[in-house]
Image (cartoon, rainbow, N blue to C red; front, top):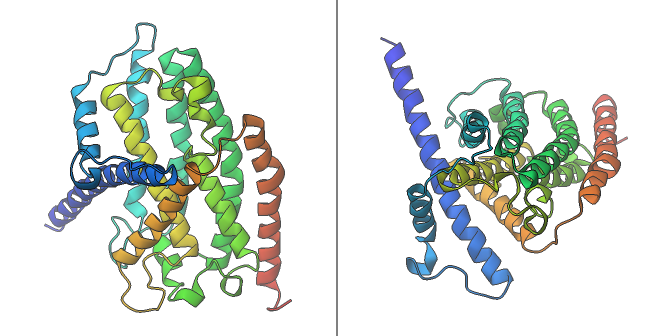
Length: 332
């Protein structure tokens, strides 16, 4: 008898997560266009619905109505598998994201490890899509995506290891519960590492690179690679890549909020809840969009040099300094 309520609960969370991913993508498409318009001194979408809010709905109907055409020389299995795998991995990580004190699908002790385990597989989905398309531009884009993700996963994971050392936990709810108010956020030197602000900056930069966002979108450089790894995709094949990308952006910003900004905790220490989690996450998403429409795209070698020659050494320094700080009395 106890199994039936658990099945209902899991199904409710699955439906809720899928609905949230769809609404999140629709909202971010509208927000990105509006922010880009105002940054470039234009209006942005305004024809479909008030302030253009129904433009993502119109785009979704257009994508659903289009046929997914598989190129004659493409590998049909890999070509169809890639967008499904991208979307599946992006949705799966929502299982352990805590939106509130008790609002989490599965509260497990290694939730942080599970998220990075699934996100690290996402690059294989992009590579499969580019390789399966049998398009030279898509293959070059897939190779770039692999090299970029491998480069930026290293400093990101080093920062995550540092946060695990500080919090002594990989349970996301436990990490959030340790940051009861603004002064207890881990972004501040007195409540984490003395280099915590730098750790947050490195984590955020790595999030931009991991989600293929400008100025690190070398895998989708339109002026060089047409449309990148999804050049040959149409209809909902392209739509699933789109949903997966915006879901990954939300997850990256949500993790930054959980690790450094208190997650669902209120800055004043009162009335914690899902609204604080969403406010902090979407503020970071706004910064991601702001960066895209402000900074020009970097070069491939500049992208890789930034990771291997700057971010990796700095993240290692942060790890060693934090380890020393935890073993020695504060202040030094």
